[in-house]
Length: 65
Image 1 (cartoon, rainbow, N blue to C red):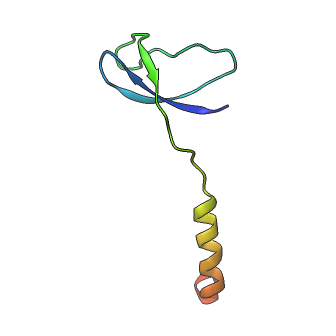
Image 2 (image 1 turned 120 degrees about the vertical axis):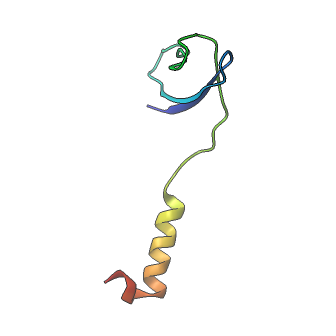
């Protein structure tokens, strides 16, 4: 299930929401109003962190012991 970022149009509160298939727009958890908008969020992954960890092990194998 994807995680989306929303912002309330009334109070401005930002929050994340896990969307299920066919589910409508969530209500704001701060004020309870239905006037929310979906924000454009960057794709998140730990691939860069994993890559850096592997490179550090190759460059300095004594650190990973």
